[in-house]
Length: 78
Image (cartoon, rainbow, N blue to C red; front, side, top):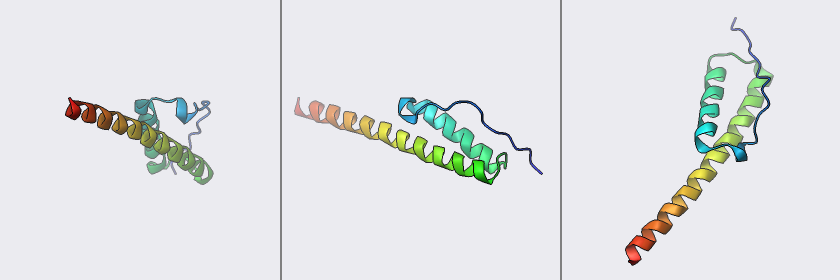
């Protein structure tokens, strides 16, 4: 049976994480769930956290895409 590790580290609000830190945490969550390192209840908590991190990453990417489109439009206008 796989050993169960629990995460006691306080979690930072995903909105305050950089894109890179959110992705890194998401990768750790996926790894822990896939390796069976967490029980069912903790897996659900990790899944919820992962969903929050995915939302954060999408938000950051959306802003970046808007900035790129704005820069491209300015370059085309010049």
